Length: 291
Image (cartoon, rainbow, N blue to C red; front, side):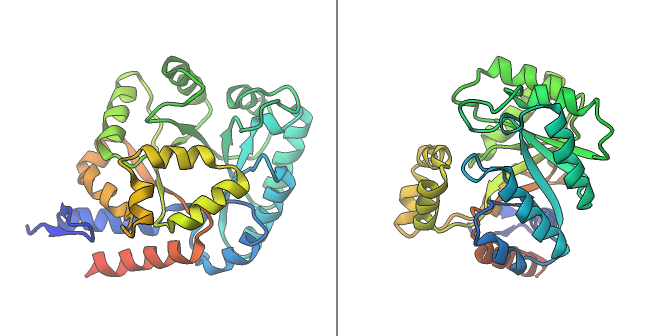
């Protein structure tokens, strides 16, 4: 079997290239509910699954508006539900009822970024407890995980939360990480600790660094920007003209056996609303790795 280099020169077998093509093509694509996203989602083929964030700046209504537009355009949609933005159990019931009414059957439950909760829920764990007692019609639930830790939560608490959340959840999505070895090491560690949730790898889509900086300042994803700046100077390299290619990390994860061993189920792309370049990259991977 001949190993072929990908665009960054990482050697990978034809089987691994096929694996990468499959997961890139079927990635969940995260969008932020800016007004421009209402038009931008029309660029995504309807086969794509979109996840819609719940911005502390724009609130739940903006996310619901984008979810409704994406469903109308034919997409499978996974809304983010931020616990700290929901007042109480009745508000949770109403929100989930609206989402199910749109035909949505999957939620991604997060704590949320706002400093002071609007009601009783301080974290996703509390919301999941209440959600489990509702006759809601939701079939799949995703939760976040943090291979490189969280700036405000200890590793012990993160692990304890995952143990609790996996009673309700069906998969987890990793926060942005650019180092395959870190992801693999973390996954092996939590698997040994009894965390069995399948993982969707959280990767940044190919990005324009200047646009990412502007977006960070506009909507408050500065933590992601600070994280990027620590990753081997990746922001500086991008601004200097180097190109970030997510398939490089996927190739370094390994072959299908490694993915199965670690229970990696797919890819979650943080598009930063660079919709056109994200879809172009997906098409490029489909063509190149099919060849």
